[in-house]
Image (cartoon, helix red, strand yellow):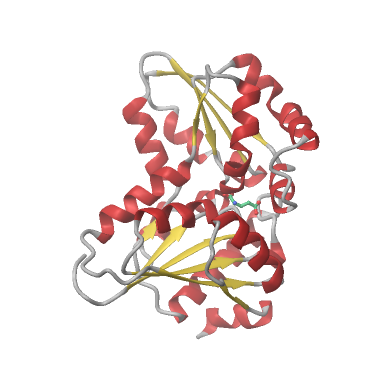
Length: 276
Ligand code: DGL
């Protein structure tokens, strides 16, 4: 995509997890894009809630993005990505960037003979088994394991990405995976990227960690094409919970020296966008 008009991209997650995706996007596309990051902080975690309820949340977020007129949507949330059907994603009014698909594509091009893969994610993501179903058809893969780790999201939202408690919880969930020692481990929830160092240390060198945030950003870059401006990319944040709380967490995680622009969206108001 070329031209002087600025491209508007909506990125969303339930909370701070998707900032790992946003950070990559800002690093790789520093000019010419207006990003709009939506975090449904009042209703997280998504991954432990009933699927129909979370599907309702997605509809509201998509309607909000339609209202603010974005040109593309990047899901920085594996849980919602796994809940949407291919048809739903392909039939949106703007391109929708899945976080799961480019990761599958990368792995299928990189696994070699008799590799094994483990997937960790929220309860919804693991129940939906999208990663598993898309990878199991590859004959190079000798084994696939998956595990839901429901305490990881609250842990990260609390700012506990390392320390004794985190190490203990990582051990609690990943003991079996460590025993299996798979060739790859997919961090199937964007919040889990913040636990990467602890997980890597626990699993050891034999297991390569795959962070889907790396792969979705590459797809977006491909779609954008050449940028013909030197005007910095911008980000506007919307949250359903406390704007102050989010601003503090996001400034730290994005290592941003700029003052972040964070607006609070009332849940009641968010629900109304569906009918507009
Ligand atoms: N970070 C999201 C994901 O990638 C959602 C986590 C949650 O709210 O449970 O799945």
